[in-house]
Amino acid sequence: MEEEILIFGHKNPDTDSICSSIIMENLEKKLGNKCKAVRIGKINKETEYVLNYLGIDIPYVENINNDQKVILVDHNESTQSVENIENAKILKVIDHHTMNFKAPYLLYYRAEPVGCTSTVLYHLYKEKNIEIEKNIAILMLSAIISDTLLFKSPTCTEEDKIVAKELEEIAGIDVEKYGLEMLKAGTNLDDFSEEELINIDAKEFKKENAKYVIAQVNTVSIEDVLEKQEKIEEVINKEIAEKNLDLFVFAITDILNSNSEIISLGKKANIVENAFNVNLKNNRAFLEGVVSRKKQLVPNIDKNI
Image (tube, rainbow, N blue to C red; front, side):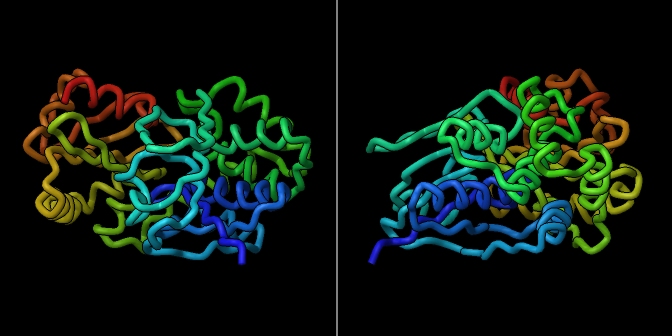
């Protein structure tokens, strides 16, 4: 019996990670391959809105067997992937991040300097002359809206905008109206514990001997999130101790005004002062115009750590 290929995005998956997994499953099946899209973490409220809108679901897997055939989307670092990924057989990687990937075998690797993995997948559909159906267009559009904050993020490229315009016609929806509702759904943080809050969208990075995490939540009220600062810091410090982290940056991003407030903890917490030319006060700093982890938070922190 032919082995089923598992397709998944990163831990603490965002909308692009989940949507791209489902889109890639559709593409692979159209190409005649047996595969299944899965998730390796809890779905956030924004993504839940998209899946409920389309009436679809995606199963959860905690780890994988040795030699499991997999396709990675929206990530390429082992620290952001499923348990036991080092023993898997990676067939393909589809991504839009900086490459931090090595494999002792040949594989298909596709990465483009665009704002979203789903933009790359759109190109693959076109190259292979495969029709983009309405539901797939909505998934692609949702992912682009999410990763570019409705085209306001510095990660957004002209190509993302062009693709989104074409997808809007196929999807038959008003991108501004749908996109704002989707983003607002993701800002409902009431049901999350402090531990869940810092892990909604957290990514771990390594540089030489330093290990750090940058977590991010979107909101329409930074002040509401900061009401929980004391308890948030408790769970962050616990995470730092358990994972032996040098730095944990928690970014609270205002999607309406395109700014962020960060909480910075760990023995290298003060690095953010040089990185963004700010002063930490009560472990916090306001970062005007900063909304992107990929384009703004990670590069500035990485070159100062």
